[in-house]
Image (cartoon, rainbow, N blue to C red; front, side):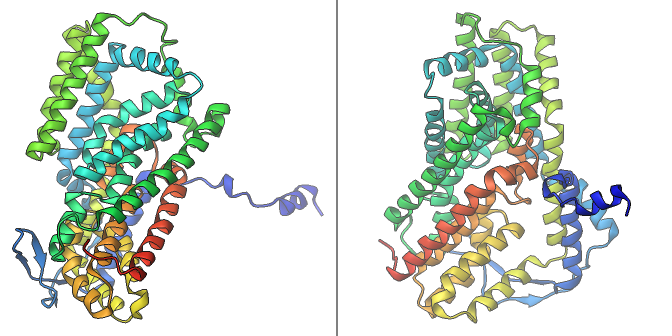
Length: 475
């Protein structure tokens, strides 16, 4: 036998040699799968009405089939352009954040000041991780912070890299921190508040149990990320995003030994005041991305001027920052195309209706876990927390009453099923936006965040079972 052939036959298959498809390829395949579903699932809809709280919800007894065209080839090809139009505000927001941060970064202020902070924490850099997680978890817990975290992702990455970690840690310190608070839902108005209102429970009741969930999720993320960060600091090649770190090291201008001047402090002051203005607007006036965009433009211009940059330099820095995020910004629009196909095929309500029928057939003891699993799956199709609450809670609340599950447990199953997978859901505009800012590919993020989110899902199931057996109620 030929030695070459014999050697090839004996060679073991190595999964590490498999190449993960490009992010655009993955999303386009999901668009095709969504189009196929419109041929397999009958179109249907619920009637909707505005309840006493002003929330538009479904009438659980009104489901009926309707005529809607199944997706064709042109619908698949048009999904990305239509998705970009639908997500235009968020796409522009990513470009503006990238351009603004590049202007501020061009002054050298952030690098110098963060470098000074890291040097003061010499040997204790890992404690930055739980501190960031805890701070941003408060935003998720108290005001449902989601798109708002985008402004802080570049800062998290700079801090992580200065500490010897990588972009995955920097992104996760901000986004998974907010996610831990959002999932725990201590006083989250956008999932717990709306769901409890539909379930006719006192708003924010059952807070103590949700606080335990919040702290548990923070502990899980902190332990995993600190261990991963220590491994990367000891050997940078262990980084899941090592390709990004090599690129970043080539772009690094050198050691931050320059003296921090008054001009640098003024730049940081402008940046801090701008972010404080945005936080104020979000809390008091419920600002969205459209309202935040002009503030970031103002931050960039003012920060660049006080930082000593000429107007043309400011413009060049802005273009460079926006250009660097083109890949990620386009992902947001392409991913939105998945929902465009499903919505045009009018199969989302049919999917909700089918899951409701499935839950009715489960033994009562399995109903809460069934609700949890259904919400995890539904989150791919309805990534909006408030939208999912309005679509599912009117159906699941009476189901909970029939099966002996408390309404508070039904809300808990919703908030955990909706919240956890937001950080890995390919149809989530927010996740695609912060991956675009960090330049992390979706497959890399799944490798990094998957173990944390998988543990959160398992822990969430345990909390739901405990809540069922302890008869978790309104207070």
